Length: 479
Image (cartoon, rainbow, N blue to C red; front, side, top):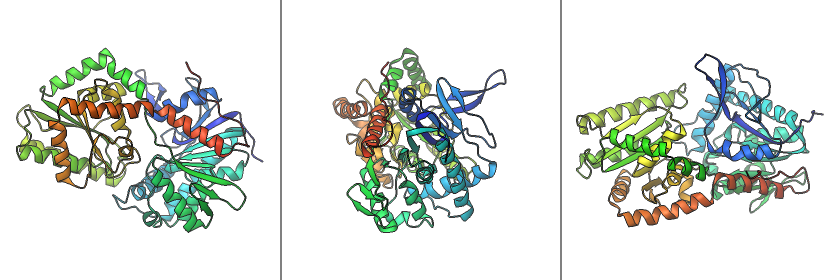
């Protein structure tokens, strides 16, 4: 029998919500990670004696549980081999490309799978130790898909939820996985399986019926032991009020003005903000913009494209190749089309704090978000939250989950360069009245459906899915 802990709410995620940083005096400290998930779950965790289980981000450290800024954190260490095989291998070399419509070719290696199983088992065992009797455990994302069933076997008293932040593929793609049944059975350990979109939940239900053989009806799976599992959509969002407050701050306003002046005060600033990833569609987006300049529709005196590409998975070969490809493309575009002091593309391969991102969102007249496939894409929502003047334009891929909610954006097919060019031009020439009409509607959606509402709705549904068992998760205390 596994010893029970004291946490009434346990978050299980690949990463802890803090990063190890080296301070100016050389000491190692923890710094809160940026991101909506932490800000959404922190108040709920505080209200429920919560604990967060995750990897600290470096190899071989077997750290003891600790408290940071009032949050109970439980590190799970990974060896260098596990980072290579579980994280860079199965999670990001197999699942990531497969779940993103095979934009890149996934690799299937038995050693990677074995590492994935071993690491998931370690996370499940830690959760079993930390959770109190009848507690709620919320497992996050594609790196942890075996944890629900492993945890269910260790602690049948728990209420378990799982949320997938990335897309879930159609059956035709998912079935390529040699371990497809094991992953489905892993997820069925949860009482509630959440997805970004309704279509993903339906894909899951269909696959369970076809591949595992359980009886299903609409959004429910009926297991032989009498348990029911529900699959449903819970589109994730952002801390909209927090981003707007940031955007309204005098420091951000000043910084936005400085950025625009540094760009030569062009008539319009286009902006892309992405992790440097092959799913994000950065290459065709920059090509489309370059062709508009080349063909005389835009001029570098009037328009500039700022592309921020945050470094990502740089030890993975595909990502190094992508970085080199983008570097060459930007150099070629600026060499062919730029003028002295006026590059067509202002390219930054770096990560920036939230304040700088808010200033960039305030600077940008046209936000360009064109992934080939994305679970949601929170950058699109962050941009909208920062446009409190109801101006600015959003050009958005129809293959981003956000396109389901943000219907007033200029929706594009990122595979259609001519269609993208037409949308960029339309946004460039749009009248202020048209921009305001669209942005008001976009802002209403983002403000009404923020990240706190997302977390609250998932946890409420999880409680309702298994109402007769376990403790009730208390909502976050209002400050």
